[in-house]
Length: 291
Length: 141
Image 1 (tube, each protein chain N blue to C red):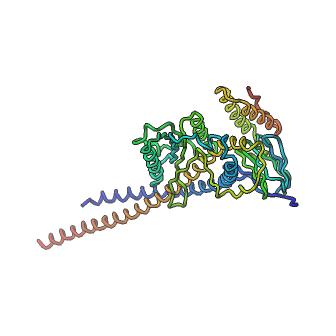
Image 2: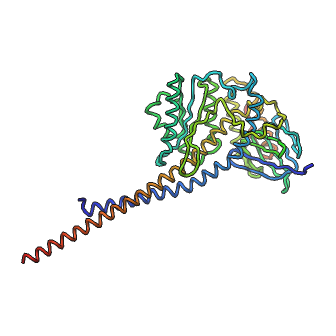
Image 3: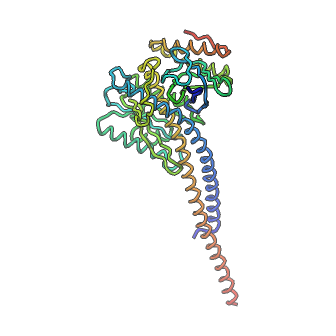
């Protein structure tokens, strides 16, 4: 039986762990609100953008002169996976889920004889993919210094991706991130960004006949690279909200578990204490009887 | 005929403006244009410049760089890559915009690519800077 001193120390240590997890949960909750607001604020832009692009893509997409970003290179031999994860851990299965999805995807592609290249955003995903796919890494974007993700960060990543595309380093690009559903569920998602595909069902404006200034193709050539940045930006924001949501529920669980553990340890502590008292009493009584 | 139309100015990070306007002057890539209610549907890309919206509280001015404007049946949406209310525009912001444009120009030039677009962007930036009363750095072309 562990002695009383040990038990007491143990309880103290679990208590301070609980304090930390509780604090982390509250910090995550506050950050989550901000992340959600940011995601919310970017939505009008993304929605309008996609609606316009869908209309444009529908009218230009069929022609031979369509930009490569829209029509693709005509091959799909080399795939670039942009895996976006958090810079920090302690957020439940958030990072692992994204990494797992990317790994499955990469394995499927490799099994079909495609070449896989991986660009990682966020340290945690890189660490997890290192074991199997280190040879496929082509780059890494570090966001650990950035407190609040801005559009400029997304543009930076987009620029990197587009430069690789122009250099014909890959044919198809897919981003991996976590879609924020609610605090307890974040859905790891894969979205193809190059060649671009736009949800045509959403475009209610497609029925309107627009005049284009300059012409459609020039606009499309100007907007497609922006589209990549926009998609990466909204993925980064979703990821930010998901990370905080995941951390919040993970820390909530941890706090509850710590509470349960403290209860159990306290009961054990009290039992041991009583046993010691009982023992002492027995010793005194039997000592008195012996006289 | 309607006197006003809905006007939205959004950047990727936030919605800057959303109100009823009677006219909006847009710095289009092919030249300035003024959109009024019941304008024919048109989509145009933007060049760096000043956008003027005549709203209920007088004329509001915004500095925009890149992006596009969509004139639909219901109103006008401007999707700007960067948009700053003119009053908040400072020399620092202009300088950082200029630096970016200059960097893009230099990069294109080094790669021996077509520099026309980048040079025009720079020139537009200078014109915009002068128009809002700041002193843009002279670009090195």
